[in-house]
Length: 478
Image (cartoon, rainbow, N blue to C red):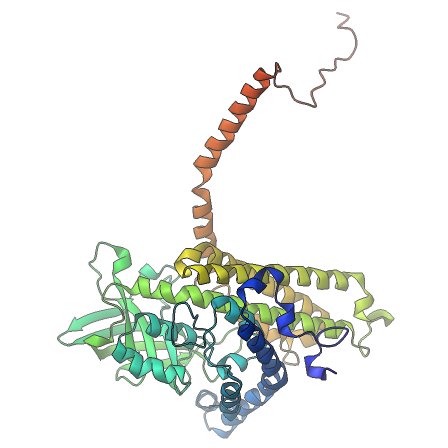
């Protein structure tokens, strides 16, 4: 018999491995299926209940400190370490590094991790518990893919072990950072050092006291005629002199402590020459290699967030204590229609995400640019629609802290901006799709010409099938 926290069907519990979409099953190993079921139980039984403890421990750290902000961002909830220990015991560690590209991971494909990440997206602690949390996942891929042996030993190994955390610094407040060629932070060589000057914001993870390394994108070659070769990516230890974390940025009112999103300045920050990643002027290459898989990870977790929203939606519709106009909300047709639309939209988005993951597995992120861009736009919009319906059903409770929906909405809305705003991906998709325009116009014209030729062969003339040529009367009387 299923325990209550695993019930997911009217007849009891259907394991995650049995709910894998049919078109994806041939690409999922038996080991991955077993692991997926373990992930599901870990998230539902241990991580989601631990979310409450996590938030309470952060609150108590803030209350205990004279400076509440400093206390919240100086905290490290012990429940996280307990969950990490449990995850390692279960073999749920570093699942995100795909087996066909990296030797450092747990040996799963992007598709297999995608199925697991959906469950991680239902809890605020689950991703970190399994060492699969952003921005560390993308940063670890940078080190694994582009790092030197020295860089890997110093930074990748402790990240893979979950001993430290990291941040990725790209966006700047004074420029339109959706176009990364605008980035201004200066990286200048002086002797045997690189000197950094400028500022960054939305530096996710920078508030965490365990964050020890920043991966920073800046302008190192401003005179290069190729604007995509002016940028470089460089490694900066978080305790390097000259760095100031001015403030944390809230996300629709949520501060995301203790990790946060920092506004940081660099004042003559000096690092050794071997701090450069891949090479001077190769920043775009590094960033694109990082952001492609990262966008997929966000989309995967967003599917799980949408499923959680639908679960809360259904729970509210069938709450016997809440009967507007004397009936359960589930008796109102408009609500059932919203449930049905949510189900369709989640399932459709999931298939798109899994398709993108398979495409990456069969090549790499560069071969799946179209599929990645599609889910980057599709999934957050779907999530916002599902969350909106669930919030509406809860009324005032839906926009308060009494349900997880408001926080999910803050995170979900952010996904339409991070890793490139929707507009950038839509423009890219539209431009690439439009490249077929002339070829298609030529093809259509050729087909019309061929149709006229065929009509002549059959002794026919082209005529509208609905043409009547009906004339009123026998003619004019005048």
